[in-house]
Length: 173
Length: 171
Image (cartoon, rainbow over all chains, first blue to last red; front, top):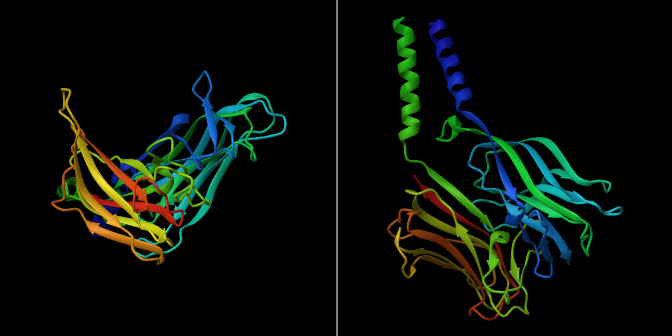
């Protein structure tokens, strides 16, 4: 009987392991929208997002499947500013599911540029179990320095890696 | 050997049950995902939580977001989360615009559900069932949610804020 139970347990975790898929979402520079109207922006010859005036904060929501675990955020861009850096936040915004409440937010990870060497890449590891997609949304927020934004900063794309635990997707949690 | 086969059958059954069962899921759209429907629509996200409101100098009070769901999903209900501290109300409408699959043609627009805040409750949430639970047809139709920050499409009430919209669907 013990052997039988062991087989069932091993089989369950084997199936769970096979069905936990690592994948990624890539946000193109054109997916981002300014968080306020006065912001102005342009596109580099390569298609990167450049802020040309205003506050310089842009956001894009991540379209995550339920039961995902966020594992990494990475950014590619350009920084030729000697005084300013770009910052990229992975932001979680939560609110009660069936009640009228004020939303709250947390920055789960931050990446960005430093120095002025030109093209840059930065990444950060995280372990965020995004099992609460009924109450929380996940977005990437870009900041091109303080207002007014620096025109010497750009973002080409942001990639978010996650695993999806499909075995829990149908109420097995 | 027989016990191993039994285990395999059990696991296969478990997998099959999961794969075939229709599940209810949720899609959420932040206020900041909505974009003004014209250059005159001045929209603003006032804080870190990415909720949206409309500038008083805006000459267009509407902003739109596309709803992307898999084909075959049945739309069950929509819930609006907002702040209403104004004399006017915030309205959110889900509609579909359809055209022939492989031919030119006019867009046939159908309203699926409209929700509206009322009074001045501050934080508020309003929900409604989508009649007939329409099934998503991505081959012919585009699904759009339009938020209107006031009683008309031309003047904004800056005391209205769109926090998010929640769509419940099943497939």
